[in-house]
Image (cartoon, rainbow, N blue to C red; front, side):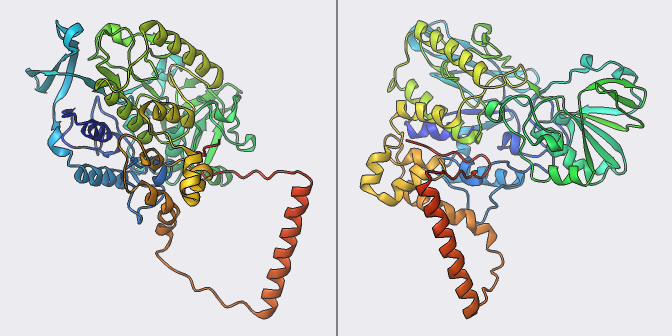
Length: 494
């Protein structure tokens, strides 16, 4: 919610953030013991997107931070951000929101009553002009034991990935990990370093090569992909074995749908996703469209006489969540201030139904994965309403180097601070130096470059000439080259 506070401050609003724990960080604050009702992560968690792609639009990650940060470094980044924008005075810790309800004069004032609880039985009521909900959706583990016959007679131990911290207690154990999302992949790799063997079952589909037993039935962009550089190596070495869905449990054995059996299983980890719930919201604001909340542009509930409640960060895309949530918060605050008007209720409902239909056609949507959007089109659509979408042609005329970076380079969040409301004077320089920050973590040791010999120079010139000739031939033949971008980097096209 740090970015939501900043979005409010940008528009001259006075934000108050209620945080149920005693510190900032949310999901990224590692806890030695799981805390019920709060998101939890395991010790080995590392970002699966670049630091440049997950940074807030006006605060790049420090240059010496690794490109794929450990959760402790993400937390440090959030602390630096909070300090830089002086957000701590706006955050009230150890206050749990128990209810959000409209005031009797809501149709006139648009105000809400927020009831919070600091200690059991110690409650307070507050009045606010607008509300942003940013509580996340990784707090209620989904543990579908009814789908696994015989689990009640299983001799070993089983638990949800929400409880997993590290592999210390699994030394020499035989472990089955059910689920093949990012958590399942990470945990299987982590456990395989100490366990006798990890087995990962294809309960949930994701993307990878069929050779490794990871080929899904849907297309590549239909679901959030598993990103784990170590998993193929663990499969090759036999430390992780891929299996199909589990059919049943028999004492200490696990039986799979293909008839294969693993005996003497010690531990089963269910990486089976989460339920999402907003129990503090009025029931009429929890209506669904498909599997997702019925929200206009995934932010505003339709039907309110005054659009003064927004949901931020409840979204998935092939890209980092921080820029998405930040853009949603910037848009919401503009609506709160009447700088942007929402459509009529009928128009919003039609848009919601259309978005839901498009989502189900384009993505593998389910109850566990209720929504997903196309990252860049969604960002651009909100940015255009706010007035911060980059004008690439204008940028090319004004500064060719900057324009080319925006057009051909990754769509880093700083692009949405180049002009319009919330313009940041450092955005241009930050974009032009983003590849320097990517390279910086690799410079802990500079290797000397040997002086090439005359023969080597000659061979290099001949090789370059050959490459140039091949390139010219391909252009003449109207062939095209296709390069694969780094994981989770998104390019904008005209």
